[in-house]
Length: 528
Image 1 (cartoon, rainbow, N blue to C red):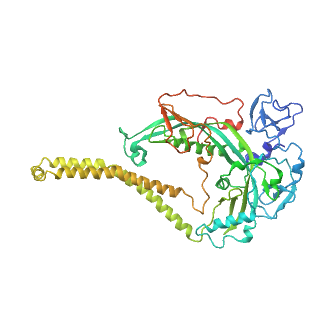
Image 2 (image 1 turned 45 degrees about the horizontal axis):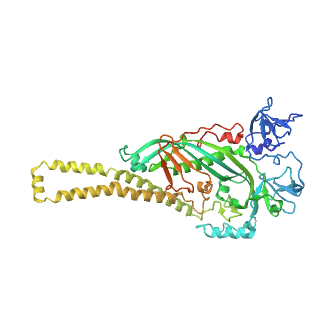
Image 3 (image 1 turned 135 degrees about the horizontal axis):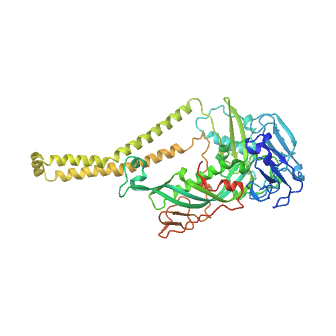
């Protein structure tokens, strides 16, 4: 049975009764001449050797399973190699986890749930990762790193960890799909000028000569490189993402000696099984890059629900990434932790000592209320010119009275001083104070966005996966051309070269040889 016929590889979406294959006697794959089998789920003939999908009547190619490299050794249809004959598969009867190791490495407990109910058996299918990043340090060092990190976590319960618990830390190679893609976004958003960049002003004032917002259409092209997605359903995706980044310069071709003394999970999901998860992360990164491109405005804010992305020329690598994994039960709850086996970065959620979680939440709530008050105060300050105009109208009404005239005659310098003072106060309230308060709000929001040492680290930003070697271009399709010079770095807005000539808009169609995975990323409504 091919791996894509395994219900687990479809993330539980299909039951075994819905999946059925039929042997092909003589029909051969047009790509590699291997036998084809018919799959009811996809309504097409599948080649187990190269992963191609073909119309059963015409044998025209209708897609594939999304890997740049054929899945020749991943489907379990070939004999176990001598190399893999020396490996064993350890299965947990409690949680169902399956890990692979060499025959000289044993385990007495499950790395995921801590259960001792383990069964060893001969490897049931070929185990062939393409790449691997070897472990950089041993268990003792990993325990030391974890203890040092715990020492820096404020208000951690004193009885949280023990030497016996930490001794269960397991070296585990996590199966990971490393994906790169060119990105082309037809972006729609608001180009803002002047005070319209402040939401407090935008919500309460209409556009005028220097302050306005306009609907803007543009196109942005760039490349995202080497974004990892774990293919193991037993490990929480956010936990693994919090352990990033990995240094891919140390990525090497898989060799069996790297596995000795460690465990390795077999992947449960392929890229096609987690298309939505992959492209949603791509969408978030793409929108962040688009947010940095201003198209010549003071600020540009893309509208996610109106933007359309095309992900082209995807490259997929299958690799094993090193992690020290620890499952820990405390106060009736299971906590999972990862120590990055290459960089030493610790990820996981930590409990609070009694009472401290409430205190921290109260502090965060107070800061959020301060942000709300900040916005309201700025909205009032922007009405200062209106208030000043009202005061001038009152002064003008007094100017018609004889008493006011006599006062001005006797004090000729007082009226100019009154007007200058009023103008200064108005400028301070309408121009200076809103900028100061807005800076304070940004500072508060930055603090609120930071994760506590008790929480999972935030997902890596796009700067970790933006490809600086790919020439990035952006242009507003309703206005001027924008070219980004070579050497442009993420977030640097000083190297924009505005030109008056608008280029022709290229609208390339989908490649007829595109894989199913690539088709899912073509003309995609972002974050949907």
